[in-house]
Image (tube, rainbow, N blue to C red):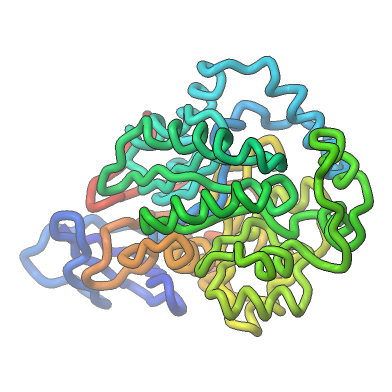
Length: 398
């Protein structure tokens, strides 16, 4: 089958007019411009054809919390409000939220995701879905005496859903400020043994910066209220602390990275790390300006994610790309779409995804567009009219 469109975004360069791809089985077997070869069945889109989008940071368990938490409050206060709301949730709440989240991801053009949850309820939902998924159970705890137990719970939940060709369960540390070094070591070893990337929240908020700079501030107080012997950091940052402790894995996927400084970026560049920017969540909190240009100048991969609907408005990756475009009008549409596809695929280790190129997985989407800028113009989530994962069309109505 050949799929052609008015505009084709290859994923690593500007769009081309009247491009097409040929799919054989689950792969792209040929690409071209102009009229497709004669004698082939053609599915024509009067819009844009582009690689499937990759959501590099998501929390599907929290999908039902959209609009229920207060915007613009300090990060520790938001965490407290979130804990209060989820304290009444049971397994079925998280399960239903995860299934709903999967639907929203697909409707927004997502074909691959890295999801992080606490209960393990998102794992079956993702395993049953057509998505390519890295589904990690979060581990956290500052008490080193509990490192084995906390890791054991997360690893047991992760192992409860078997891996498949598209689905890979794992474990993720929450953050440098919420995990003991012992717990971090266990998670890093677990992920390394399975060939899975390490992802964690880092340099997300001003309060986190204050905690590592001087052991003070509301986030430091929050941590000490949970564990009185929480370390009192001085003169460092989350990234520099992780590096000094030997706890920054090669290829780490850093979620957020809003307060990274020059020294942090030099470390991340050496480690081949990627940084995930979540535009709607960033706006929700009013975080410091995201350092995209500085990261780009150092060759650090920057990709996009949605975060959760407890701190954002949409699980549509096209909507995230549109929001990023609104703050970076100097960037071309194709550059931002590449962040939402090829860059995310590289960060997640999906080496044959993210590009419309011969030999790559047949993961692609079609979006109505009269010109190559339209996919990210205007307001609201753009319509996705077709999604293919591994050469199979996805039922967006389901």
